[in-house]
Length: 634
Image 1 (cartoon, one colour):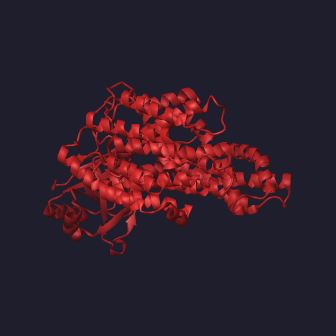
Image 2: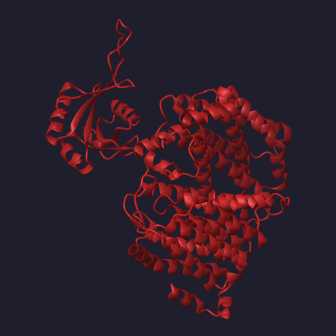
């Protein structure tokens, strides 16, 4: 670390000036990256020698001992990057002292396991130092509001990064994205000193990520995650001067949307589930994604990608209007709520005792209490569509004019939007979009949505033409608006089903099975098996060579029956499922014989109506009406 720091220090002030201010963030980020790459292995070796190891436990996700204290290397890398760039004056001493206290508290927790309230006290002191230095959340707000908001912001974001540090590479990946976005914003608004600090955080996180990506060789520990959260929260406060006051205030919230969402989601679900908020657990967003079927790397990539999307949304404020920023933000809020409601359905801890309401039931009870009783889903749908309709028209207007629309069109948006919203919501209601069980929506519901959106857009076009005349109304805007509304409203309606099918296709638990046939009956079996947790459909068998290697419902046709020995060995198959309907007795016997030779089970699959006996009962079948029986090979 010392050698890297001395390398950065070889630049004289004149040389640094010659580099130009625009290159200083690059210098800081590159220096921090280099130091992290050099220092992390050294810290890892020291941690292993001293026994500073994170060992597997019930509330941890890893299953092998991993070295701790990677945050020490990250702390040193950020310090080296900032000092080496000559921008240590970006903040005054109280801010740096606060960063040091946060790092020290995290280090003490890693080594000594201090109490949570002790860390909270340190965070309060660090935030007070930040306020003393003149920094606060929401510039231009009434003087008595920024102080509590600053405490909420700093403590919330600092702990949010600590909470998302639950999968290999997740916290460091999100820090790379957020730090890079804040550096770009800081540079764009002329705050090079803030850009330097953000770039140093991003560079240190990237260097550490090399050793922290799965399988992690070292964890950052609390000293790293708390320090990262504090520094990003501090820098985020500085970029609230992007122009429009309210939009500028929301920019850091959007950049750090992923850790903020996770912290909010976990807090709400634990409160509703009757669990302690401060107790560790495997009920975070990333844990649920893995349980739903994503790999750990897939969950990290997904959340990092979402973080990048929100960061890009924040960057749009630099070259477009606040109207478009708010419209994109509304679409993001709707998507986040839909995604959060879906995640609630995934079980993350032991279900309550018999008779006690589970988390899903508690969430439903709360929603019924605050939003429309038993019709809370319909009320939620109206609110979501209202936000979507508002956002869609604004986005369509900006897309049509390639940025800020002309003054006359901007005025049209303000004046016409209330009427468009009312008209479309009324049409949607008339078509029954708020009366269906959309979790099981299919083609008829899709057709109904298409008709409703098309008719609503035609009515909106007619109203605009009648009020403003052909010269003021852009047909392109109406078409773009129709496309966005149809897609977004459809996403909120079909989102649950799409997510359920996607995660079911990714799930890899239970017996690994092949389904015979890629026609209707085979796909019927696939859809049924995806609702079970005891089997995972790995592929399909089909005698038609033209279908081999094709994807059907996200499942690949792997080959024909005669290739079963090779397929079973390559894909570790436990069972072959043969639909009774659509297959002949000869085919079933041949498959059973092949399965017996390979040493895998063979089962027949059928749905059937069972007669009711005289005593009102029926023969026992699987709980969902499916009948799977073993052949003689089982």
